[in-house]
Length: 112
Length: 114
Image (cartoon, rainbow over all chains, first blue to last red; front, side, top):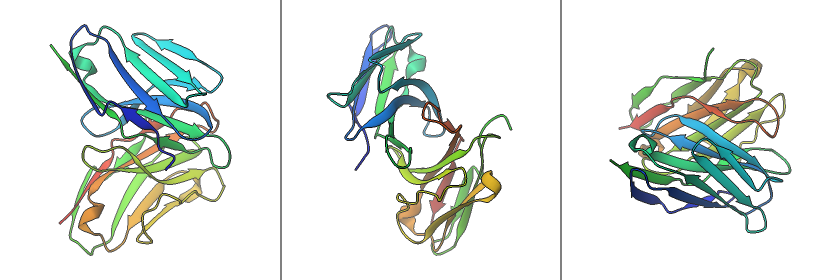
C-alpha cells in the first residue's frame, strides 16, 4: 500500500498541552500535507510541506519532514478543546499520476 | 461555486439497487478525487481525474464502481448492485493543477445500504 501510517491512532490530552502526531510513508513524494476532519465529514487543509523543506510553521502548528526516514510530524502547541478532531497526513507521490493518498489518521481529544 | 458541492448529503438504498453520487468541484480546478471513508477509518482512494488525461481508477474496489467526469467539471460516482459493505461516506475533493495544490473537500455523501 502507498498509504501513510499515522501514530498514535488516538491521543487524549488536556487543554494547554502540546499534541504530537507522526506520519510515515513508503515511497518518494513531492509533498506531504496535513488535514483536519471534524465529525467524519469534509476535510480541511492545514499545511503543506514540500519534499525539499524540513520544517514549516503556521500559527500553533509546526510540521517537520524527514525524507531520509520517510516520516513527518505535526505538533499542535497550547492545545484547545476546539482542536478535538481527526488529523490525517496525505502524501503526493512523485512519478506517474500525482495523486493524493491519505493515512488512517490520528483521533485527537483535548479535554478542558 | 464557493466550494466543492456533493449531493445527496445522505442516501439510503436497498441492497442490489444502483446509486449515483454527484460532485461539483470548484470552478477551474482540474484535479478531482473520490475517496471512501468507513466509520472511524481513514480515507480510501477510489479514483483520480486530472484534466483531459485518462483517470487513475486503481482504487476502485470492484467493477460495480465507476465514475465519470463530464466536460472537465461535474463528476458522478456510480455504484451498481449495491452491497451492505458499500455503506460509507463518499468524499469528493478538487484541486488546482500542480504539485503544490491543496485539496478542497466536499461534505461527503453518507451512503447506507440496507
